[in-house]
Image (cartoon, rainbow, N blue to C red; front, side, top):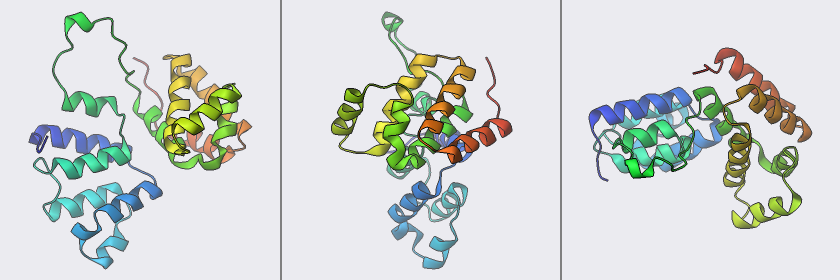
Length: 204
């Protein structure tokens, strides 16, 4: 894929800007696009994903015809976002695949919380996993399978948690915060409360 439509680009951009990204991810993106930014003063001023988009669009290196650059941002900010996947592959699901298990459509605050945890859990991930009663052998296997890539390991832990809770978001929240407390990450517990206060999950 070398390009996408204007409507696809705008829809994906809106999703990414709404999700935002934490400082470590933003810094990686800035570094990846530093040659396009081409100004140390502007590089240092970029303090949000929205500002980065504006600069890259102004430099004419981000837009419908620059899929590779947009894909880099997607992979950094929301690699598993179901809405973006749907925009990029809008064809109807074949009737013969009606029994196929599809990724759940996660409410936006849930996606933001998942991403925050993947960004910030760090070395606490093992205690976080134990907080969900994940067996010790499974924890060792995760560490080996993903070669100590904490973000991918945490993604798998959160995926298991979502499968257990389904769409019972209150159970999801309670169990998630309990696991974070067992990992002594009260800062993330408070961040979850803050996100859900400002962006309550809408029940469908």
